[in-house]
Every structure is written in structure tokens, then in C-alpha cells.
Length: 221
Image (cartoon, rainbow, N blue to C red; front, side, top):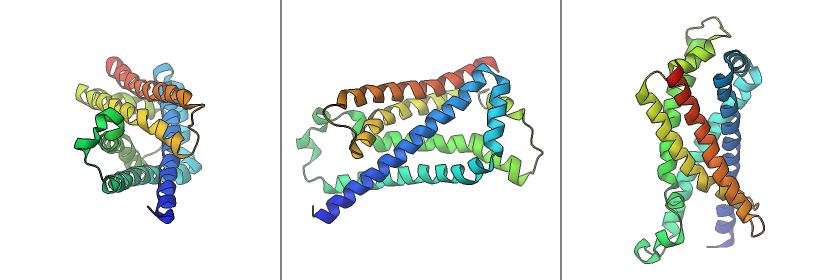
């Protein structure tokens, strides 16, 4: 690999990591808002109404989020293609199972599963929201959000789909969290153990929070 290709490869990984950081931040923010629906219907409605009507959120942050999602998955597929193309030793001789985890070798599988979930999530929430505001032009109801989230988890098959998706998100995050810090140079010998521990905490707590919310509303609708 020449210097130009090497620096391009590093640049691609840094961009991938930065988009990953942004999406992980969004996950925490999204979980924090949704968790309000467990503790307070009024607070959840107020926060959701603010997020759904704030022009900065709707006009700036939402398009940036959609771009980040598409960029992250397209870049992930591109990097996986580049990595596969660059390998000169056959897996049969390389024994990848002895050198890396199943998760790290199958980020595309977990990533595509998460992408499939995001499509379902858009169908469940984002598209109806767009239709409510910009197609049907219905009057804004600040109290509708809690009932809408409850209605999505009436059917057990929908809850099961969400649980499976967040299990795969957990697997994806276990490697992606560490990889993002490594790509931007924050993971080294002195803090490697700390980053690993944080990756497990994040990849378990955040998906588990979303799973809890889905099961809670299913049991309490």
C-alpha cells in the first residue's frame, strides 16, 4: 500500500468513527427521551412535542441524523469491501476465529440487521410523523405522543422484532465502540482496558434500555 492509499484508508476509518460517535450520542439522547414514557406521560409528551416542533431539531438536526445513518452504513459496506479485497491470505489458513471475535468479523451482518430495524422504526414512527404534519396537515396535539408509542407495542410480534434488533445492535456496538476510539487514536495501551469495559457497559445498557421500554409498554397498554 502506497502512502496515498494508506492515508485515505486512515481518513475513511476516522470518518466512520466520527459518524459512529454521532450515532451513539443520538442513541443516548433517544433513549433518554423514550425512557420518560415509562416514568411520566406528561414529561414524555412535553419533551416529544418540543423535539417534534423545534425548527432547529426538525430543520437541521433531523437531516443531519438521516445523513449520518446513511453515511455510516454505506461507509461500513465500503470499508468491508476494501478489507476483503486487500486480504491476501485465505481464511482457511488465517484461522480468523483464533485472532478475532465473531462480532468483529461480522459487523456487516449485525449492521444490516440494525439497518433493517431502522427501516421498521422509520415506518413505525418517522413516516407517520411526517404524514401527520406535512401530508394530512393535522392540528398539533401535544398529548398524542404517549398514546402513539403505546400503540406501537400492542402486538407481541412487533415487540419481538424490536428485541431481536436491539440484541444485534448490542453486538454491533461491542466492536464498533472500541473501533471508533481506536480509529481516532484514543485507544492505546494505557487506556485499552478502560475502553473495553466502557464498550461493554454502553453496548449492554443502551440496547437493554430500549428493550425494557418496548416490553414495558406491551405489558401496560
